[in-house]
Image (cartoon, one colour):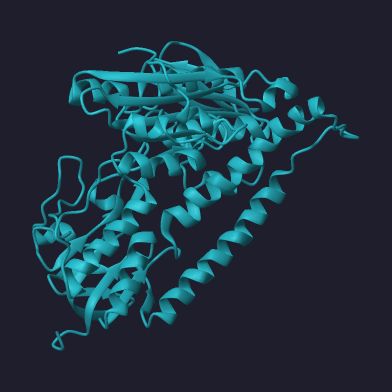
Length: 454
């Protein structure tokens, strides 16, 4: 590969791009990375990390209220200061940006600041320089997409929501996916009068239906005003904020509108359209098991390929890609996307792994469903009416647990461990034989003995 300037040129220094660059460099490959925005990509800068920090901040609202039942008396009513949260978050993200930069530097990877454009199968242009590479990896992720309607330019997207100058006392979220329900919970917890508008009958399409219904009810109890089977028809500026008119005729006056209406591959300006690279129906880069596009020297991974839009997935893909193209022993099988655990940081949290009840009925036929719907021990003194849902789905013929779901405090932390069991193909008998940790909510996963339904 000495005929090229680099063995691998990575476009995008997000989670997948940085992992691919560092891992390839560790094999002795010559690697360069181009990034035109911020190190760490969406997850570090305008995604997982700041979102989780803001979710932590919003949970304090409940904590202050819960404390009274345990004997704590606050001398004055707590007050939330948006600027403190925002600015402390900015400081933490800058620290993480620096870590990513040092990781690349330590690995011997060259970092170039700029938006790279692919010239042909082996050349890119960036920052006034033309660079050749044996392989080019596209790892640019996604970008927020907002539908057009009168006043759509007045909305905020998920890249902008973290750094508002002032805190919106009245807040509206348009959408029904991860980002929508998370930010509706966050701003509600921080003290906003919060509305969520979604065109469908129920948010979080693709998740277990019982989980969706339970989450709807718990979010409503916490004060989020849910508007289903409605959409935003128009937004206009008024003296005291924004006037939002819904398709059902309802009008809401708010201070800010977040359009959490999806993300699309961030391909603009990359030059790929001139190379005949094949796209999927959704506009993503189509790749094979080796992460090669229809131009084999141009690779792609992460959100830009249309798989599960999760940081750990991009990291796994990066490792797999490097094994294929730079490792001594290529992987024996394609990357397995089954049983990937995930969490939604709405309030209460959702954690899930494996099949939903609906998917299991279709895939397995005969199943057993075990559920536990209870008020956690903490809330017997706090006075909160918040409840927790835990659910196991079992293939009746094999007794294998094919799905596990939870809605409740720290659901992501709990499901991470349960995910190992589901991934390993453990049976309900294995769960039953496991001695629980008492008193915890998580012990319900090993004590549900009687099926709720079949």
